[in-house]
Amino acid sequence: MSDGYASIDTGTDELLCSIRERVAVITLNRPQARNSLSDHLTPALRRMIKQTGDDPDVGALLLTGAGTAFCSGGDIKGMGGNASTQEMSFGSKVVRLQERQRTLTGALVAVRKPTIAALPGPAAGAGLAIALACDIRIAAESTIMTTGYAKIGLTGDYGISWLLTRIAGTARARELMFLSERIDARRAEALGLINRVVPDADLQAEAFTIARTLANGPGGAFAAIKDNLDRALSTDFLTSLDHEAENMVAAAASAQHKEAVRAFIEKRPANFAGIR
Image 1 (cartoon, rainbow, N blue to C red):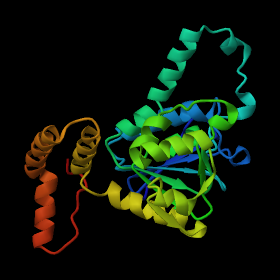
Image 2 (cartoon, helix red, strand yellow):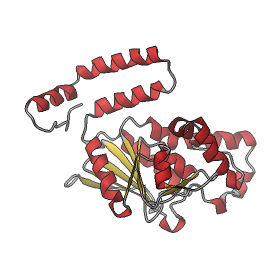
Image 3 (cartoon, rainbow, N blue to C red):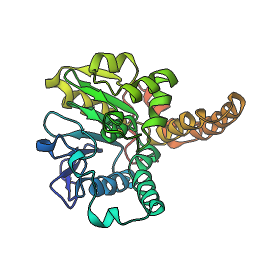
């Protein structure tokens, strides 16, 4: 990597990826189609999530969209399916979608590094699910969000129901799914769907600054924090306490913790580079 930058070949122009200052910047690049998912973009996105998620030189993932949209979800014009898909049995179609979901939003949620979505504009349907699967969402003021599924007689995929319920709560999740209303960035922020709203012109710089800070932070601690937070969704309080204790004791013995303590005493920024 020269000067902390490397361009990654994704196999298609519809998805761009680079690593800069330990941040993997993954850009959906179909601006003419509002970055809707396609047969070229989606497999490449799956590969890049896996590749950068496993790369020790990457400390955080930043997902964004080219142009003025994040991702408008599936390409509605192509939803009729091609002949080969239509000939598949119901069971085969279910298995196929299950695998696609697990290797996209499932894989994104499973990444043990901080993940950030930078939304320059609309996030709809599966595109909204991808944004919600990230740890932090930074949105431009012009961003809008919509589930969109009910408007075209569909029920939701890529984890949208699970993600919305846990982020916005049961009542709001039902409202958002049933009505499929377009909500602006400020309302999305009030509902907890967005962490920060920034001026459109500042979006990429603001999101990258946050991603870079996290990418160069204590990766081991971040992985354990994500583990604690994930388990908190499905365990009782005492079990969560016990699991936190295990991770806390392990973190206290880590080289990253020791470096952080030295940096505090010496009144300097901690340097976690090369420390596992």
